[in-house]
Image 1 (tube, one colour):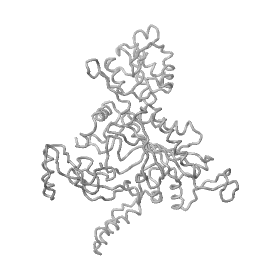
Image 2 (tube, helix red, strand yellow):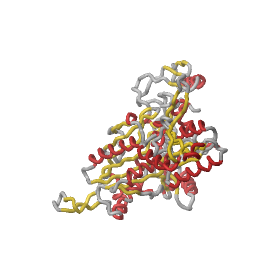
Image 3 (cartoon, helix red, strand yellow):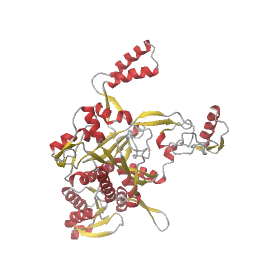
Image 4 (tube, one colour):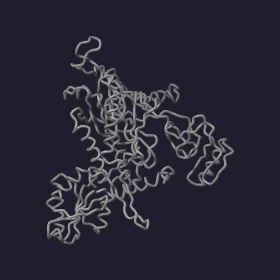
Length: 532
């Protein structure tokens, strides 16, 4: 376990363990040692994520007349990213710690006043001793060692220290592109790079010039994995608006994968290089951005609460002027209180008319809207052409899954203080299985047959149900508590006598008898009400 992993809060470690044990999330390529920041969603995880994204799609598209959907390509024309400003601005300041070799973003590092004490904490005494010796050789003498901590260092003029060990001894900052680049086409660009570099060497070019020559060759076939889904919606603005006869204000929604070459990947699936987004671009008339920014703030906060997140663990955080993206004049984050602290779950940003104007300039196409009913401010007559402004609610689906897991995870203890059960109190609509059907005795063929008939009824009603006969009834209850199944139906001898089953509710373990004939209706009503 790395030093950074060992610092993960205990609750987070328990959630990660449960995710693997119960099939929510696995380390990708685990049999080959895994790949840092890459994760696979198991049988339970893929259902949970799909349910979350379906809830978002229902709230944003299916239940509204003013929003339609889109699925754009992950790989788009490279000029899209040139025009949007991503190639020029989607960069982060990269720094290496000279003590623990941690690589991190300077703008995300812990702040320290210049001259303030900066104790350096290593993972063990041996590493602390080795670090003290190396720093002394580099001219940083006078540091004292107390166990695994080095004392005597002070923060430099940069005003930040290493987030992993607290060291102020850092490499110079350098720009790091957050976009994944590839090359498209049947011709391998490497040969061209080699030829260009050979020519440069023969002409006495320095390293900077050689890099420029190589970049020129690669740029001819360069494509990029999208770092956000938003640009696909902007470049299709006119096609969507005209084909669907949409009137401003209206929105275009999209869910899908995005990719960012993150310097620091952390907190399990919270920040990784491959992730899924749920974004919507809401186009409105100039001057109406502030109104719709407030509207969507309220809508989105209410939605997160509606799927079960604890209201006290949600808050808004406004972006300061130095935090705003190059396209935004105002942004609020919906933050969730994760086990490690408050962090971003969704951003609601005013993107103004930046994107549509940028793509109009880059493509030479007019990306404006004609409002036949609006009064033209110049002529005073009906009919106005304008470039719409945009408000964007952009949520992370993968972060949403983690927030839901963190919020739902609970431990219960008996009177002696011993752990009695672990339960995921998922909102019933998010649960991978809504119902588990459990024959009391798996060797009783009549109970088994009756149980499978009940599962079939739920399947025909479109309700995800699981037939489970493995282990004792107590262990089966415990298993379904841990994967968040809200309702368990036990089929027993009485079922054969009077056609009733026991329904057990996950959260309070309350049980009652219901008729088999009513089981689908009872569960449907419980799902509608969110009963657990």
